Image (cartoon, rainbow, N blue to C red):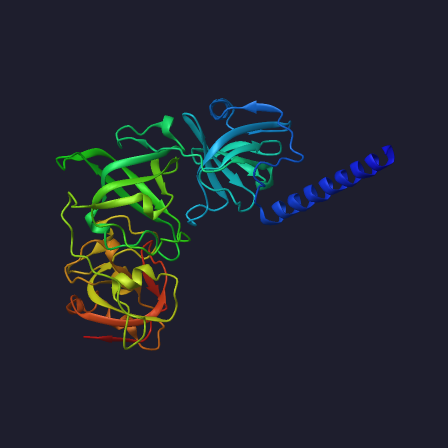
Length: 397
């Protein structure tokens, strides 16, 4: 009898080891923590997020060399593509970003324990992070834990809300930006979000909504109205700006009439061929695509040859076009009266193009202002704005 019990016990032990090994291997292969299972990770010293934030403020950077853990609930994940190798966790009134070595399977609402040994407490341009974190060092303890966003005003924004899940009401994007998408093809999208009171008086404060061009909704047009938006609040010290990251378009509800009067919205059109060229709205959202035809009105010329266009002083919207740089580029728009460079494409005119396209420049031919240009080239950022380089074939009307 004793022999049978021992044999049975050994078989159970072997089965447990094999099951543990298989589940752990699968979790590591898929960078997905196994819910409720923690095989090898000791707890060690337990920190609260509040304690970690205090350490960050005092030390700046702290490397965890001993067993330690922090607990929290996931309030943002990588599902939409707007975050990459990152998520945010919150515990009570405090939150922090997790920046991982690889993508993870964390989901909003997961209650987790984060094993800290080997990771580093630091920041990215003013936003606190736990960096160098292995996703396999995160144990999911439970799912579907609901964290409600904090409803605040743009006037309330301060360091106590950093990394928090927040909600802004009575907000809208600037009218001049509403014909754009959340992000262009080859860069992050950054748009000002303005807040108004119930009487449509502008609140003295604004937030930058920053969206990755890899987000699933990157090519979705910005909402046209006023309403509410939910997301994560972070800080970018280089530009001294508060930034806002959307978790999902389902949390953007801006369907009420806007306070700022709408501008004429021109939708993207065309397929980029000679017979069906992109309009300028389409050229803006298709930056990074090569050998395309576009068509628009000539509305001006940049009077700088390098750097980035920062303001209207670097643009000649009207004659005379006396700067040397006016001979090397044209600015195209869908509206012949356009004066917002962000609604335009800056076309570089190569001096060595076989078609002789540089000859249509405004410096030498100011009468071309207002004419329609159809041109082929590579859609690439030029002078810091949506642009076209390597232009060659064209027709001018």
